[in-house]
Length: 201
Image (cartoon, rainbow, N blue to C red; front, side, top):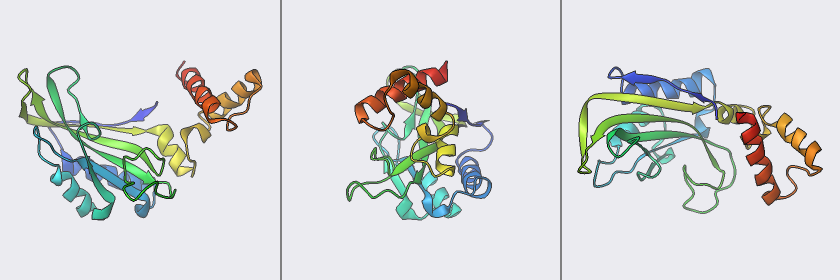
């Protein structure tokens, strides 16, 4: 998994990160704006709903109906251990055009309609030993964009495994195994696992 990213240590925060993310996707990569969707942290007992990020997205031109809110399991990072810096994140998706799997289908659904390419993590809390979340005096940003995922979307592919990062490996595996990728879903999973390991090594 190759990652592009940038950090801010107490410099720009949500507005800076989101505006750079949006401009990069729409002006540099020229992804159609109507294909983009995002999620923000839904809020819980530890931290409020991240309406700030949602309003920045709206200000950038993201329609409210393409902004979703997901719980901590989906839209929160950290801390790396039991305590330390952590905070909400906002995730960016490309709508592949696939039909919704259900009326509740939205960014973050695993059906394949929405393909995550990037996230901006807003480290604004410090989790304490007692489990409480204290606001950090110096707020930071960590972003990450998956290169192969983004390439797949730019090329109109449905998966990273259809890009040139993986097709030569899958072809070699077909030659070795005498099986064809795409014929059997259970076998395809094995193809993907092996190709991921070969790609990493």
